[in-house]
Length: 603
Ligand code: F6R
Image (cartoon, rainbow, N blue to C red):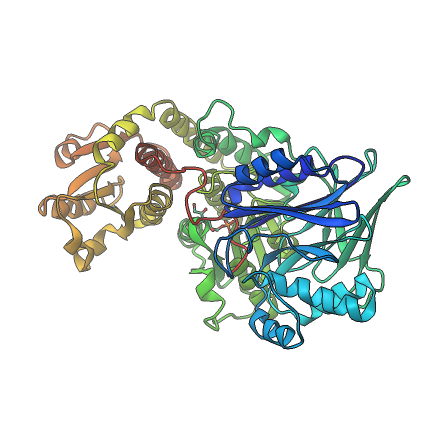
């Protein structure tokens, strides 16, 4: 969702701010702005739409400033307009904000009654006005920040600059925010994501909630002070070196990040296998060797929820342990039945998804341990977990999650194998290598999937079906298609079709049927039901089957042999390619689909 970048130092702040915002573009936004402190004045430039619009304005004005803040906004309160874009500022302060101020409506009315004026419809401006009010009363910046922050409710991150100094102030509550420094170049940074600071800030600070961070730059270097809200010094922050590489911002030979990330999967599968079976990750999995709990509570959103559905099957079938998988936004409000000694397992690529974080907090309140399957080390989910199982997918830039799904599932699978004490089974490594090879083959020959896409991309709707371990893959296939191709798609358990959705079937509907080797005949009967109603059928099933060839309009034969529990991942990569090619033919914005954000930090 929204992106934040702030800079203070000897150089022109415009460069690192715009570069940082460009790197965060993939997260989704609808307007962008920058505030620069120039000659003790705060100058704001904002534009609706893509960052390029702001870049053109900057090109025209050529501003130079040692201190500034920038923001890409994903609208929550107020329409997508330049006025509602951030930063919000006046002649004292400028503010950028991620998150939601829940009591903004009430506060705004009170402030208006006191005579304060508002220029936008946003909740964010309420923070600026509070800050101004408290500063006029106290003439103390830190105190005004603390008072304003204590007045608002909801999860938010703020960065603030003021006209009198070159300091950067920031603080947050359950929202991502990091501070960075480079002592050699005497530069201070703030961002909602360390990725924006790669190559700029070798050292990153992760403040905990409700800590005010004050960064100042002088000839002696960068000084970062941390304060509690009562303004006493705080040590509630962690420091980490920023080990990410700038290469990850590059599409390389691929036309889209999504395509690049699909192609990264074979090597990532081998890496995660080596990491958790043979290398450093092994000691993490050994901690759960023969581990048992009466119930796992898996919660996640979107694609990560689908990964949870696959992992549930592993825990139940391999470990015979009960596992419930719930959509995080449902779990958090349902007063779930949680007993002691059960485990909360939270799955998230970003580690910043608001609903998933709320479930983690709920489980913490109920006194059960929190495990996380997460990609971003240092994210809020990671920091609040008792045990972390990193998926090591690298930065995922395509908004549609591909490689993260594969690695979330594999990490869950390896956890399951650790719990059953079978990590040293030589067949395990062979099976994982086989998966990597089969995915490589699909990558090398995705033309055949493209040919199917060419035949069906103009159809009105798509129903993905699968049984057993392929049911979550049907859900994931449908989600991927709808999010990047903007076409109606649903995922169903194949046996469920006749209980309602079959009414939709006609010649304009395509059934993408995953027919695995298990329950083969039964799944085929479901496909027959669609054929009988003139639906078009794409069958993805075991290769060289005359029956499937005959049954389907289009047949993608795959080699399931030897993949066993990992075959859903293999099929899923085929579906990733299918969605990609359909979206490509439809000409959509594949890496940044409309209305979507990479990291959903509001509920
Ligand atoms: C779909 C997609 C989303 C995310 C969901 C959870 O392609 O990317 O459905 O999976 O928003 O995000 P994380 O995994 O960051 O918690």
